[in-house]
Image 1 (tube, rainbow, N blue to C red):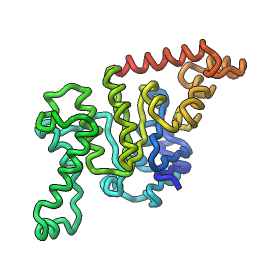
Image 2: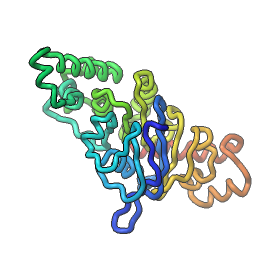
Image 3: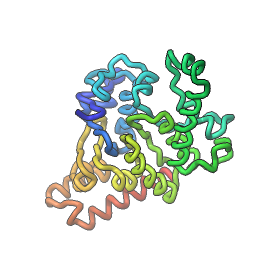
Length: 283
């Protein structure tokens, strides 16, 4: 059984489907990606998985538990955390305190622990925060205010905050948006490190270069439906992906010729051009 499973997941608003019959798995220890054109329904999918928007049809399970009726904060306590496109940082708190706010998970018995073993809970939270800052290379900025840092550094803080609670699965909603090429590459180098710390990742991003380079498995969403899935090489060679990103005529031309990205340089170059355009669009 996968750590996260979506079966027949649909989200509709007054008859308009943002997601329709989505089947998707995230396995433990893997980095899974979700890509698709603007308006494909990627963020809606994350909102549905994390409880921020209601699921119209289908079922979502996490770590063997049906998530129906479970509030977003309870899902986070189960080990399912996320980032947001809008950073939502506490501007008047230091980087460390931003992460502390996310790391703390008070339980009904926490006050007893504080009485019997004073400081134990806080020490645990601080250790988690120090670990999250270290893995994102933010330790030197622990006492800085987010408002004094660059946009790229603020993005890294947002990711570190999601890590601070030591979750089982982190859903990253376009963490590379607004980053320059160097910052995106730095982020990509960090993402694979997370898998060495008993975490799994689900990555949504417009930066196709990032997703194709770091993910173990990729799903492609278009008009709310999964149109392709597989390894990065398989997704890159899928005619449906060409059609979604380059237009119907390009997809038909490729299908008619039996061409694949692996042996057709002109289509390969076209997709590379799309990758560059999407990266510049979000830089």
